[in-house]
Image (cartoon, rainbow, N blue to C red; front, side, top):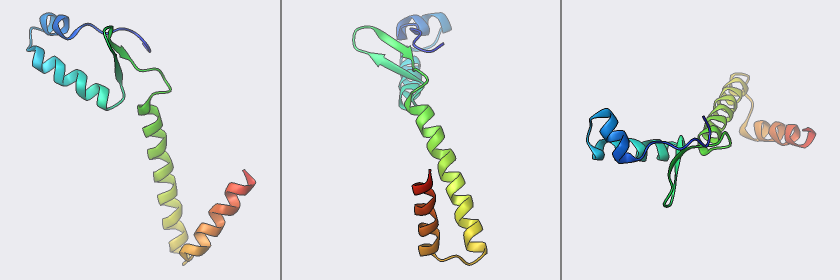
Length: 94
């Protein structure tokens, strides 16, 4: 659940009977990917829905859609300038 506090590194390692190094590495990767955040002196927390992860997912969706649009435009032999002009026109009307 968003903004929920996670177990401490040591507690999680103890509960799972694994190395603290392993839990540290796991939390670090989760933080880098935008799933969790660390707060100095307070611990680790689940990221809010406006997290970097959600932004990255939406950015990826935009990239895929733009890539598909470019491929479709190239199929009908549109030039780069024509594609850019169309994009500008669409941006102005939205």
